[in-house]
Length: 120
Image (tube, rainbow, N blue to C red; front, top):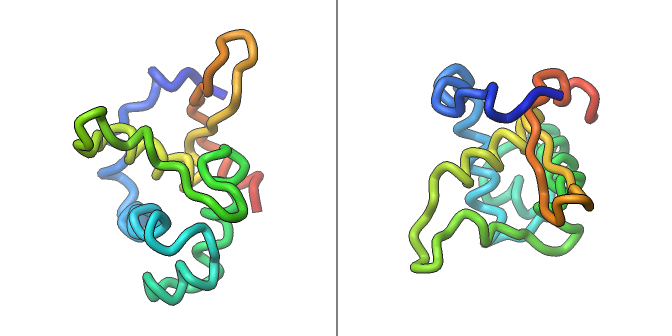
């Protein structure tokens, strides 16, 4: 795993045209919940595309089997903070991991370009 500081978020997003569909799934999840079937029906994307996203989001504890947690996307004033949203897209794509760090008492993100290949 590499430091997240090594990741240029803007470049990573621009170089991955498939991020649009992943972003669509994440934006749909607060409305549909984390159900593969409901997300597939709502977005029109195949189950096979949604299943690994769902698995990564649950592994990162951003989703549970029944809930979607996207509170970090918004400021206290309710304004969307695009940086946090796109960071979660990278988690969903498997390029970034999110793990609880007991010593720091918070979630930590790490850049892991080969993580997507290991989570099927």
